[in-house]
Image 1: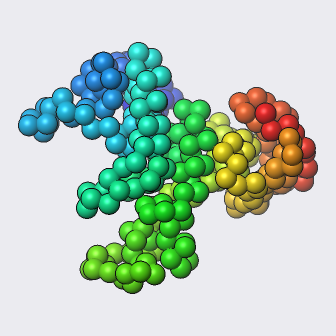
Image 2: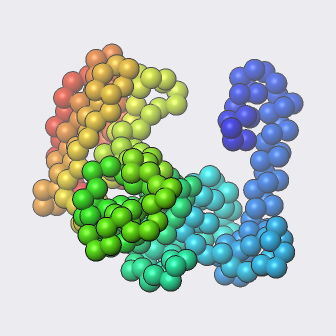
Length: 279
């Protein structure tokens, strides 16, 4: 449970002193994080004294930026340059621990970072990079194992390859593993944009905020979510300078359509087809 969640629950319970205490702790921890883990000159992530021999040394890897951004830990002094450093970890060539050089937009995260990297890119205004990361095909990437014949998400992105077969790294390995499959949450919440409303449990009301691919890597997206009220559908297709959208809002629910951060319409139950400018 985050500090924000705890503060919210204490307010609901009428424990105002506890709410103030948790709010104070949250602010203190955020200041501590910025002071210790972000270099004040380069705005890059760095090691703390937890590993004494590496204290102050730059970390500067994808996960070290994705998590603080997504969890709201980066203050205004660092934010612009911090995001630029984050993007640089994607646009540069990287090298794996085994010495393999990887091309730009390679997925250099582990289990924890993979769950949040595309969310962090979208929430920081970098959907272009999120889509480039999604559609990169060389190892390591989500599409690489698909091109090797995968029909499920693997624990290792090179669990099997046409060149090396099963290789020598499968003594402990899952061929149906959620961690790298966490991209599915971004596809639903961001690409087709089905997003819950925290004030309306069970998707009684929800948001439709589809992010049309600005990188032009894909021209359409379509999907659905089975809510307690019925199936929610969302799809978009590029059509010249416009995007054609289709939505299905279940009975006894409503949805707010938001495109590029702007409220477009309130949608009542039924099917909705719209043609909107891409920008």
